[in-house]
Image 1: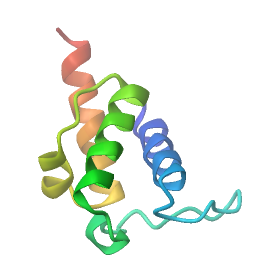
Image 2 (image 1 turned 180 degrees about the vertical axis):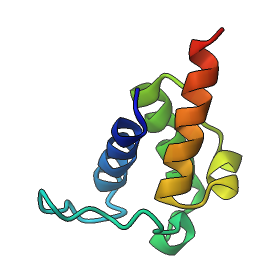
Image 3 (image 1 turned 60 degrees about the vertical axis):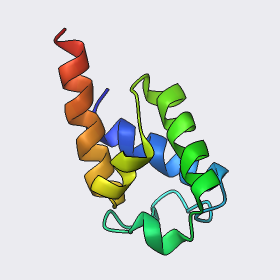
Length: 88
């Protein structure tokens, strides 16, 4: 799965959880948006991680969001993690 698809997965989940409004076709959340700025509480973080796992097939822990706190950073992390999982 490419980084752009993972980014789309992340944005889709952000919309589903009401963290951002559904963007127009050409308007997506900025890549540097910080998850902390979206008002995510601990339950939302857990739900976000579970939905990411379902969409990507990768294990995503709450600490991963703290370590990769933006849309861009998380997408890059998931892309790298996916490459590592695919090489096993």
